[in-house]
Image (cartoon, rainbow, N blue to C red):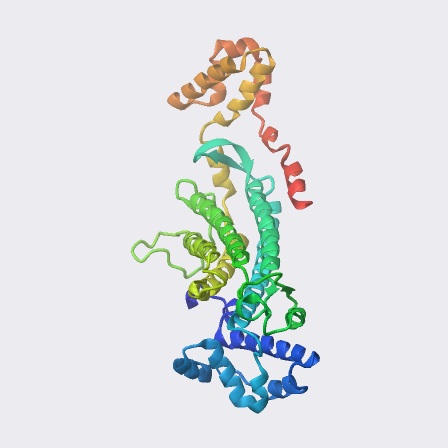
Length: 431
């Protein structure tokens, strides 16, 4: 997590100030419950809350001596709150605080990322509708296939990010649990009612069974979803990068007036934002495997997962938030060259109508393989001679004997390829 790829809102979630703030909320919620059930004296929570203050520097100084972050935090709070502070953390263990806090931080970050996806969906939808019937060539294996529209290209991303939104909602629900179960999760030194109270206070669910830690399969699922979202971002960025290539030149990232594309070549306009998204997607996906490896810990717990999560928690969420906002910026501001789309569409001089001609031949009685071979021969001749595909078809006696010139002309209709576009849009947008 570096400044260059960080936005303030998510970054703050992972800063010490917010982390200790959440720790204090957890401790106070637990103390409040203990008062309620006459486990500690009345008034402790109120006094500790009124006297407590998060002092990040002081906590760091204490930690330098005791080599334990939660103990350093508690000592800092107790130093300020006086004798009442000794009742904090009664029967609890560090993981009760750390794990519940980590889940809250993931939820806070996840909710911001959900909002990011909402904004991306709005932008994609707007552009998809604008270019709904803007014809361009569809490509398979990088080779011209059949006509599609730029709007249809975009609506595939809308559908994909709609799925990502639902996946993330489920992932947030998955990690929104609270564990206040004490050493090895047996509740030997703490009443389960304390956990229930804390969970309700923090709007979390009670973890059904914790082994001193919250099970890490929950977190593996969360980070896997972040990885999928990153892959969707990369799919978009790769499409833009390919469409901006000089020999394609159908779509461009916006280029600011004083922007410079190359330190050596003044003529360059490079798709640097999309390339950046590809790189960031790799970083986000790199957090998935460590999250999965955190699932298998020794016995009831070890701390091999701790150092991993201190890194991947902020890195994955902060980077994904940045990437989604950058993607939204590209979608909203990209320049569409419909003239080049039309030019590229006609590069092969009508070859993309080959399937329709073949199907028409089969509908008139020819076996599919024979029809395929006839049309393929005409297509290859058109490529070799650089002549219109229509003219090449007219040169073939087999075709002239079966399809009249007027009927052949009717087969070269772009509307044939766009007639179901509205059906597809409705299927996606009405879900």
